[in-house]
Length: 613
Image 1 (tube, one colour):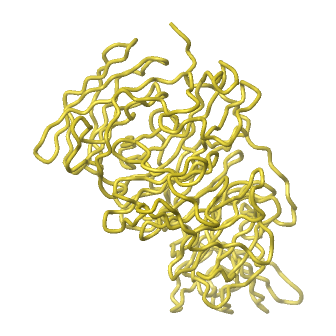
Image 2: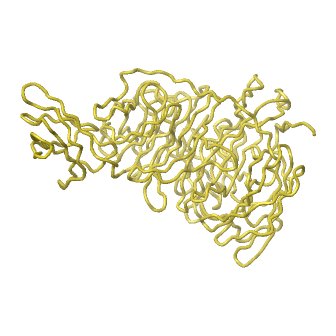
Image 3: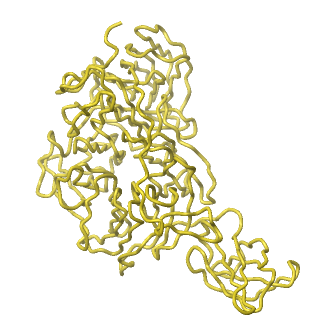
């Protein structure tokens, strides 16, 4: 049968016998059909990409093109498993189809695929060839909890199930700070993990506690089917360095409306969930595989973690596009030494962000043509611009093999969250650690010039009031109006900066709390259910009434109703909303009490159940 472990070449990408020529493409999240494909190249993007060395045994064959793309006469042959029957399923976007084999492939075999693809009145052959991985089992042990301070946990009498981390504002919002709310997903330390919205005063707006063992990351506002939605990753974070879970989409009434699962037998990783206007989602996954690493003086029976990127059709769950780092990035580019223990997986590249390229009208010098995707690989200190049609790397920025000359201040280490910005600029979070290579983590805005093959530092953000060096995680977010928000990931800090670098807002979660990325947005929501009220007899004849409504954003004030019986309630007091839970002292009220939520116009938008003191 031959050696079941994948031999890894240390100095060059694994060659693909069906290598394609870059042919251009279309706007992010949509078609990648070449308008004038080069001779011999595929007319559409075919996944697994030609030459992929470690496709999943459960892989489908994806054909992603332009509007109206149709696929026929698919022939799939495994070198050991023979011809595979299957069915074609169309993408909801109308831009292609996936062939779903009726049975899995066999580990170690080579698969060849041919098909006829019709679009734009022309029919052409598309083909690919790839190897099937020997997937490896890894420890399912989760990261241990780093305990913080029990006092840094929020508690509410009206919502005892909500126990998120505290939030301490160290620099209140200054003149020029952006209006909106912060979107966090705290985990580790004391308190419950989960998606969390807080306002600029530090008050909780909404919290969604997760089941034991689950964590959340990448929580923020995106748009799905033309409407604002809440999106986050949820699952388990393994101690070997990646997540296993799925991505959730909730509407503005906090109702679950969709789940994005990784396809082809993978589990969605925690690093990326990005929804496109076309109703697709970019996600990442980690795939541990058996590998022969004798070429880098390690075991012939080792385990390597490959980074996999997918574009998923949300409505159908089909994989529209898939890319494997191992087929394109040599292991020699890694700055993360292989582990000495053969059973521990080597995370050689660690792709941690995905940013689909701009359209042709928006592309600048850095994005030399549309139809690409920008990837950040932490363990090579490099950004990769990948052609969507072929999967080929157009250029590298950073690391030891940069295609750009690195100007002063542009070198970065262990980075996260590389994002296309208008005009082909790139923002990123430069961790500078771990191990430390810099004194502070930085937010960077870079200008890569394709004509001169140089990159220039346009902006750099560091906190002048404290030293913040985040060994992992983090993001740099461009805000409307020119401000920037930095979340420090492994550290519990987040800071808003003006365009010139002045601190406009600064806050911290509890000790040892982590938040993979921090987002900021305006948010308006209709909370489900009704407000929750509690009444407690105080000194004399007064009643203390506490009330909250998890997630309600339209409440401006509360009106207390009281009476001798539930049928005789009448207004006795009104008070402005004061944080997540408002407490109102009402003399001579009760014993029965209810509370109405009022909007800014004074209209009743919700009423609590009647309680007694």
